[in-house]
Length: 439
Image (cartoon, rainbow, N blue to C red; front, side, top):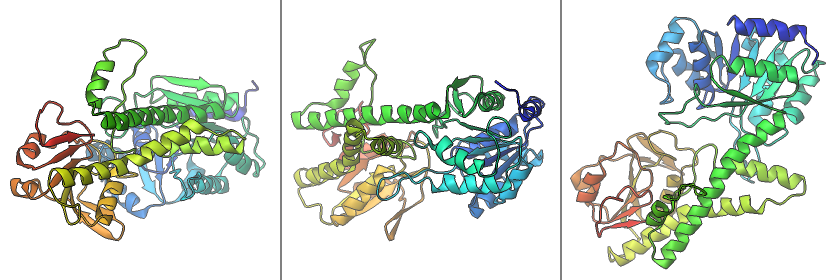
């Protein structure tokens, strides 16, 4: 490995905490990462195109639950972090980390336009000696096929004049045990010098950093992690659908199966997949595979099963209204409890609740919701508001549907005051009550 003079200079800056870091994209990945580096004494430029976010952060207001206002305000006061929409701050930076969204297009194809746009803006401001790391989840090959090609247009030699790597984000919003500072980091560099510097900078904030042989391997690692979860959730969802037909309690089956001390890992059924990763990431892998002549049948089937679950929930609610409430879903009063994509967070991205509410509204049911983390919910052209959980309110609904199992909800109160409950999360597992029906 040829030692680059720029590598040695950047190594010294990192070890002395003189390296300035720019984090592009201040969402659930970028903001915690920026804060963690600042906490360790590095100066961080937080960059985002959303002016509202920048305004809030500059005042010390965090829109992400995992980042406390006190921590943010302290970093701002100590002048360890600044926030702006100005990409020219890249010129002042030694390390640039890209954490922008990578959604799907309506055609279910990858949309890496945010990555491309960020890379172009970096290229316009790049200088020799900088390290660029992509953290945005994407298909294998993006770092070399997109970023490297664009940077090479400046005549810079990777591994000598500048450094490039991929390191998959592993953020789990709302997780009280694992966070940015203690989740093992995987890094794949485009060259050995790139890998060396990337491992060095992450090791300043994370105890364990694992190097893999290339950026492609690192990109594939992230997709494997999330595809593994998506496929296994699809399996248990399909078993749940099967158990529904066979009149078997899927939750009891899982509890029994997980007593086996080897060869089994419990996954749980639910109303559908949500969030920025599980519904999206496996389809990035499918798209890339098809471009190389391989049809990923299992991944596609898993996506179909998981996508069907909101529809299944709606069908079960209609069935319960007909058989237990003794009237049509037409103008039935339905309460959805929990609209975020997972418990104890405020994120509604890709939430199955949105699809469930939309389908119930299309059937002309009267739908309300309660969520302690979401006060207002846009559904098409409508905007719903979270109701209060009072005895009178709950009793006024023909059916209560538990979609997201927030810990702070009083489920005993709901059970006591409701007429009929459809529980998609098994929150009433300890209650043997005739008005509770489970997924």
